[in-house]
Image 1 (cartoon, one colour):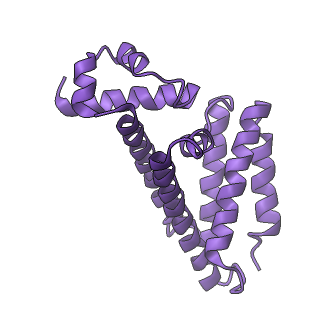
Image 2 (cartoon, rainbow, N blue to C red):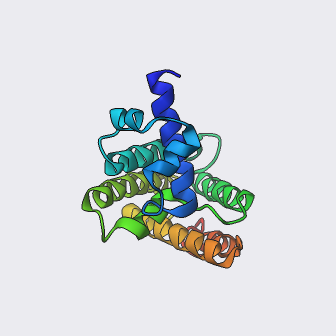
Length: 195
């Protein structure tokens, strides 16, 4: 296995374990057992569990942003349809996993915000970058006349992301995608209703 492959494999295993059981419950030994990588190799790539956690966060965020950028920049669809398609795809992914896996960034934010300032700051930066991308799509909807110009795009984008994270949390607790379905339907029937 090459250096890049080993690091990538460690991050992938960490992402799966952290998504399933949380950051604090995921020990380095569990990651090593899952990958078969020696402990010394782990510390060659990551100086600490916190650095490993940051690498997992970065990988998840990069994958998520790739999906955001593809779906929200699709010129074939009007802006509000792009936003809805993105959220609908998220609902599909949640249902595919029987509502056991949600948003890793949201999960880690709930788990770590009061316990690890370095990770909290990075999670905040990531959420803000997502908010900016949603806001850009909302601005475009304003320019095309789909939404009123009086809306503050960053506020609406923050509302969408906060509502999404809350709906995903409820879906996981209820083991049902219904809270996310209700969120999407209500969002587009009230706030993101074309003029």
